[in-house]
Image (cartoon, rainbow, N blue to C red):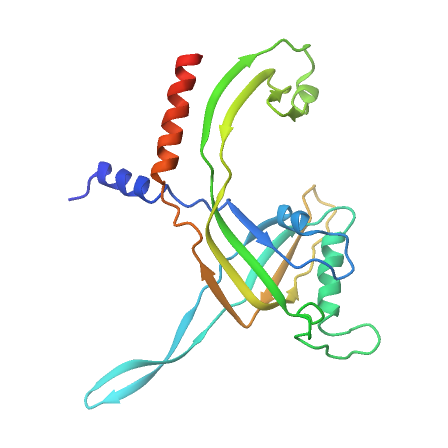
Length: 246
């Protein structure tokens, strides 16, 4: 019989529910663009973890038919990036695609794999699922700030523990996010750069969608995502100390 307590216990045992907005993407640097790995990761608004389908054929055995596996298929991976006014994201992918097929002068097909691993157009792309670190509120106290218009107040920065927009001193204990799943696309390269729609109706953020093809993908589980005894004890201990001090 289903029990909500059993469900909550199962979720807790597994370290909580995996969040689709906690991810980290690593793309190769270079290709004549100033865009660096961290910038590319921050501007990636969505990306897919690849799937896989076993291909089968029908085998007749007497009066019975059954499916027999003979291979597998993998779909391309789609990713979307915010485009900045410097257009470095679009330049990055244009140059990567030109490293695949020179469409400007020679129209020649380049080498997929280089001798050093970095002079061909096929590279590694890593997609990591993260688990949020432990956060424990330790101390929070309001401090006086001048009364400003809301449109200005809300733009005030947060510097370290000082949240000037809220007028608070906020001290938290926070552990780093953990990688619970890592997927590597081997010999990946962009095969489709979808068009960007420009319009004079309304305002909107410009996004660039890319389709990646690859030879195959592998996965690893650096951390199974479950809450360790150490994490649980640390969270409880810090919370207990904070409640006594403040």
